[in-house]
Length: 271
Image (tube, rainbow, N blue to C red; front, side):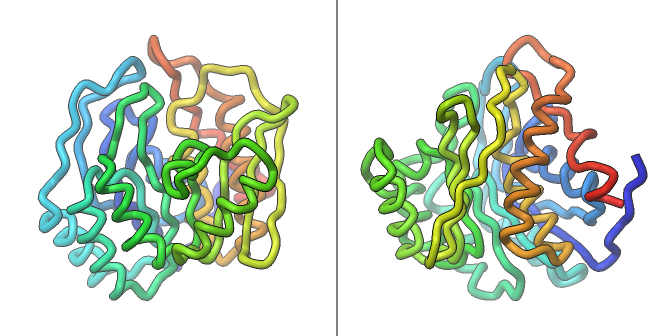
């Protein structure tokens, strides 16, 4: 597959590390590369994990994460930033404070729990995302569980979904890409822009290739925005990218298999 590079497109991921390479900043960097975007990273937390379990999580001193951000931003200004797992309220608050200085759009994936069921942020951290961080979001990409944690009620009807998106907009997010999960054999996403909500759906794949789907979606979205695509086009394409990557997984590992980032995008989309 030929990939055309976009020399002025630079994406910075601020996220946790997954040593298995299926999720976290490793997944983000792979996705950026596949879409022809130069990737940089700042680590927020370190995990000990594989496809079976998360065994340990260590959140870095926020000072170290901010120093990483400052070092790369001052030298190679990013076109877009992407946030992943932040770990605790201290890290969220530190990133929110630094975001006041960002001159690039910010894609926020409010990571709260791993595919293995391991909590990746505490309740105080969720509150800090809600009250301090989302005001800086160009796009926020919660799944159903994360959206329910942010708004405080279940998404058990179309009206509840619409209210949740509205409430997240009130927290400051310009756009919301809500991952609802399976409905009637389709994998459903809702894109809200403060004026209208649009459904983006693809056929649901019965597959255990699910490790890193949320990271890949927000990373693809970030890369495409770095390339200059509109939010509508980027969101539709990112959903398709993840669908293809799930379909192309090779069943690596004994647990939740990583999606196959080599197949993100198509020749027509990438060049």
